[in-house]
Amino acid sequence: MNEYTECPKCGNDSIKLSTNEAWGVDYSVKTGKCLKKTYLECTAWHYVCKCGWISESFTQ
Ligand SMILES: [Zn+2]
Image (cartoon, rainbow, N blue to C red; front, side, top):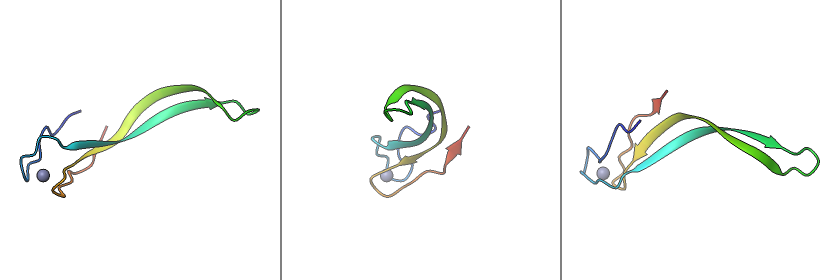
């Protein structure tokens, strides 16, 4: 899922991967506490660089 390893604009290789992730979470109705958290999928992601460059958004 890594489309970029460096910024195509300035060549910086410490770019940031920003994701939208889906989790299934079970809560106790009584206490409101999180009982179980299950990772479902990464639904969308994009890359960001300090220079202001932002990649297009990728989806699955
Ligand atoms: Zn950059």
